[in-house]
Length: 233
Image 1: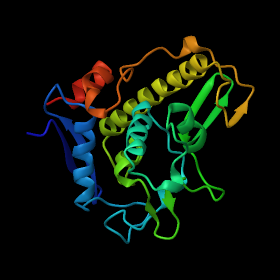
Image 2: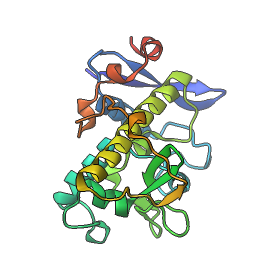
Image 3: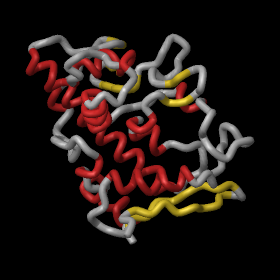
Image 4: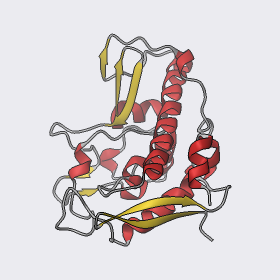
């Protein structure tokens, strides 16, 4: 039995979706599985390209900011070491957090605010996009934001759930960014910055701490009580 269900919902004649949690032990991976399953059915409306019923061949969202979670990088690390990525993408032999942050990410710091996202090329496209085929080169290991985004209408609770997961996962990545630099006794990796003034005290551990797989992160632990009450059935 599925622990999370992605439910088709029609908004003013346009197919979108809602999210329901049917088992309190559901994980972020259960959420991803449910949403990916619905997306693969090709039944959702695409607001950015109304002439298609699937995302294949459309790369419009690949030219936007793609924030990352700490698990995204852990998945990349394991997949890279196992040889699942094209050799020209591999950032370094060690494939540690520092290598991934330096080569596959953009770390932007504006005073106390930190944003860690997928690096983009000179034309503003995702680092992993094949411009010829307009397909993702690491599709099976694409970030959570990519797995959960589709340009269709969604309910407010489904949208809020996605925001909570992404924000919490990125907050933990920022904490790991700070921790890694301190342990290595190296300057912080910063690609874009405006008077950086980051205080480690502003980045306490989150429920993503110590997790390397999305199946290890329980949705109930992530959600504020009010959101959880809306999702659980």
